[in-house]
Length: 332
Image 1 (tube, rainbow, N blue to C red):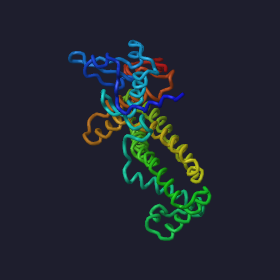
Image 2 (image 1 turned 90 degrees about the vertical axis):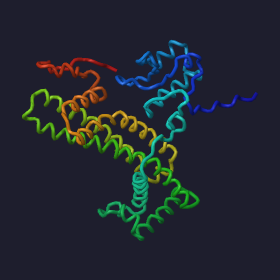
Image 3 (image 1 turned 180 degrees about the horizontal axis):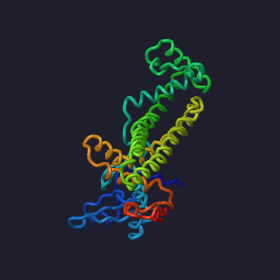
Image 4 (image 1 turned 180 degrees about the vertical axis):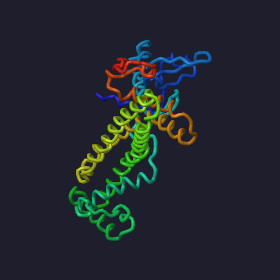
């Protein structure tokens, strides 16, 4: 008996239930308040939203049905795109695990050079201990370039590959994946680190402002430091996981899956943080009051980084004479 061929994953947002075609110009996006995946439909001059899970229950759409699977893909897609409409292509992360965005050529060079430096360190540990700019010498120093070629040959022997060309191909493949981590190091980790440092300076300079302002700045500093610590730990983990170069090359497929998982997690964080980071950039460019930016930043951080039993009402903290003990506002 012949088995039915597997249905290839759909690459476009397509829903079959007749209800979807009757609702007009629908789209899908996450709720601005809690991030729930929603179907948005026109309602006069306004919009109405319905959570996708409630939509499934209301219309009896099973998870395993084509529409149920598509709604799951839509929910996953909204981690990587702002909105989807019927007929829109799904992001590459959902279709094949690739990224729907690109690192720069500089990020690609940085990632490739990191791998080459690891190979050099494996071949000659003394090189890894040098304090000079070995990375710059990779491009210009014939002796270092010769050592790189020797490292490729040595790695081919260690990995029992036919020749150094196969090692070059593996390094190129891994370097392309790690370029996204380098991009996120610059676009997420560095700006969050700069924001926390700036708020730290503000916290030390708020002696002459009112008590409430000091409290708000202190909360942003505390939660921002916690967020920064979490981001830094993830980058450290990725660096450590891919630091043993021979083991990394020997297990390239599993390492790429690991890199992509962290890439997507960090990219989701970048998308969430982007409006906050842009608020601080606008504050630098156009000036204005810092208090509203501090307030918005605190609200953002509180939703994500306060311990679940310690989320205080921001409004209650801003009221004169508000109790310092947090109110238990949200648990998830």
